[in-house]
Length: 494
Image (cartoon, rainbow, N blue to C red; front, side, top):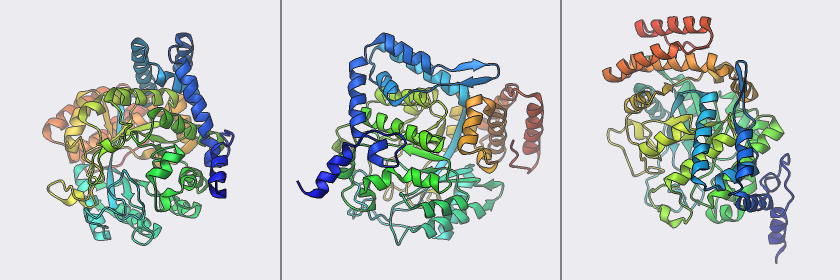
C-alpha cells in the first residue's frame, strides 16, 4: 500500500470529534457505521423509540415553546423503525413541531442559473466537463437583468443563484457582479430583496466578500457524506477534494456568514448513511459556532441530459423520502427545510405537512430560462416535475390553508444566525414572521395574482390577521396591508 492510501485509510479511521475542524473527525465513518448498527439493533425497541419521541416533543411554557431535538443516533433509530403505527406517530410529531415553530407559513423562492460552465467531473450532474451534449452558456449582466425582471414580474422577491465551478468563466468577481446587478433592479413594484448563493466551496476570503455583498444564506450540497463514494462520484476537478468541500461551511461561518444551508443528494448512496452524516454535520456547526444550519435541503437524483437516475442503485420510494423529511424535522426542529420543483405536486403536498418550510415555485433550471416563452431543456440541470406557474402554486398553497410568504425581513434586520434561532426557539417568531408573511402575500396579490387567487388570498389574510398574538402588531399589520392594497407603498416589515 502506498503512503497516500495509507494516510487516507488512517484519516477514515480517525476518532469522532464533533468539535474538530477536520472533516473525517466530525463526519466520522466509524461513528456512522456504529450508529447504523445501533439503529438496526433497536429499530423494533418500542420502549426506546417512545422515549426518543417523548424527548423530541415540543414543550410549552407560557408563551414560549421549546424542543430538545435529537442526536444523530437517536434520529437514526426513528428512521430505521418500520412499525407502521409508530411511523404514523412520527409524521404527527413532525407536523406538530413544524407548526410550533414555522406555523402555516411557506416561504417561496426561485433558483437563478447564471452559468453552466464547469470544470468538475461529477457523475450525477449534466454540467460535468465531459458532457458535450449541452450548449455552454454564461449570462451577461444585461441578461441577468432580463432574467431578474422576468422573475420580478412573476412576483418573486428571493432568489438562489447557481453556477457551475469554473475558475475563469465563473470567478468570485463574476458572482459578486451578478449579485450587485440583481439588487440594483427595481422594475414596476418588483425588487429582489434577498439573494441566497449556491456556488462551489471557496476560501474564507471569498466568503467574506459574499457576506459584504449582502447575501442571505450560503448553500452547498454535500451530495454524499460517504467519502469513498464521494471520491468515486467526483473523479476530477476541484470538487473531488472531499475534505475541502466538507469543511466549506466552517470557512463560510469563519468568514462571517452565519446562515448556511446543508443538503445531500438522496439516491447517490445509502439513505441511512447520508441521513446520519447530515445530522452530524448540523451537530458540528452547532458545537463549533453556536448555531446549526439555517436550512436543510432534501433533493433526490432526477433525470437530466446525460444522467439516468437508474445508474444509481440507492433510489428512494416516495414513502421513504417522506419519512426522511419527517425525521429531519424531528431531529432539528428549528431548521428551515427546503424542497424544490424536482418533486411532484403530490410529493410536495405531503412534505409540507411533515416538515418543509420553503419551496421553489415556477423554477427553471436552465441558464437564461426565465426569459424564454417555452421552457428550454437543453441546458437544464435536472428535470422539473412541478411545472406550475407561481400564481398556481400560490393558489394551491392557500387552498390548503398555508400562507405563502415572500418575507426577507430577518436578513435585513440582522435576525440571522443565533439571533434568528433565538426567536424561533422561544416562539417569538410569530410576532414578526407571521405579519411579515401576510404583508408580502398582500403585495403578491395586489401586483401579480390572478383575480381568483387574489380573492382567495384576501380572505385568508383577513382570517390570519386575527391569529397574530400581539394586538399592536396586529393593528399595524392591518394598516400596512390596507396601504399596500390601496396604493403603491411596499416593503413594510417588522
